[in-house]
Image (tube, rainbow, N blue to C red; front, side, top):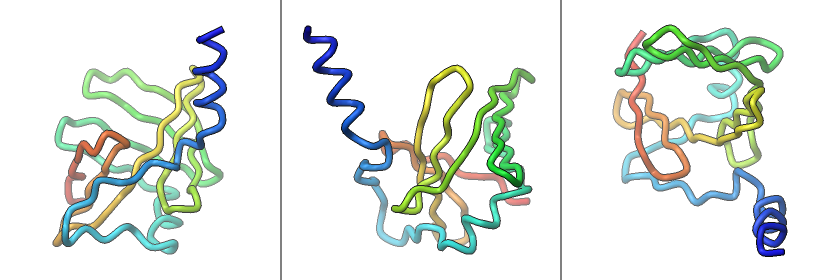
Length: 116
């Protein structure tokens, strides 16, 4: 019974309802910049790569070469939500901080993107 209650609570709370832990100077990407993710591959400093394809396909390739596949969408709050084929999902917020592009996850962890 408790499991059902917990599942119901998660189902009733959209993934993008997170309060983003931004820092002073963080500027979330605007709608045009978010649309511009389509067709881009972002490389992080751990050598992982997020690939946003036109039409909403998404893949993340780890430094090891293994990949995870899914789809992405833009939420109303400007976060980028990923739904993986394995059922796992997440939403992240991309911000500009000074001249850097940074991904902030729901835990508030910050992952800078390497310059292109």
